[in-house]
Length: 309
View (cartoon, rainbow, N blue to C red):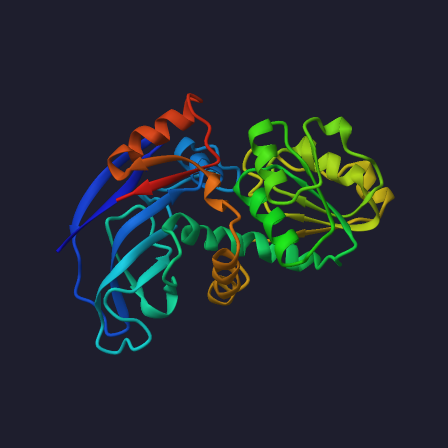
């Protein structure tokens, strides 16, 4: 059996490669991809060679990481999964993936693949919120309503039960999704954010000016978590950081993907949050290369892209 993979061979140079899949190890499963995603904030800087965290990229690179599919074969030692199960995994833009069985996130019946795919970044956003550990009565400001910012609002409202969450977002469409998820106020201009008001801040914009606004907007001894990759601007500590004796924490990856998915899938089943609205564009796998080019040249600007195989 062959596997087709989307490979980045240089700056803005994507191509599909084909290779024979190796035999399954006893603890592995073979997954046929049904859907995947483009995480624009993370993948576009790699495509454009603009990622500040990787000044000297090496090629070739595999692309993507969020995949949803059906198990079509299992290793002899696999017991927790069976052929036909639907799972979320981290193997990226491929039509088939081989993964360790213990890395698969099993998806319950009744969960649409667009909702299932978001469990990964939802867990990443949750980890940042959990590091701050706000109380229900704390006021929180979130900068940037891309995927991470919107999922942070979702988790703050639905898990932490915060009464007051405000957001910084100039894009009115993204601001409306934040309101749908429970945001109290949407500030479309940084100058509109109140100063010395919030107990915590979450930086999800990747822009230094928004990070500066967070530092001005929180109270003394407050905490700010950086959830964005910081691959657009270089972040700086401004005078407010020292004057207020603020705490800055970073967060990367999820706290526990399987444990989080239990809460996440249960929440999705019980409520209609329309999280799938984060996928503002749906394409086929054959359109992936052109989609990256269209995003990079600014002709389209989706929050997130759903890829159907």
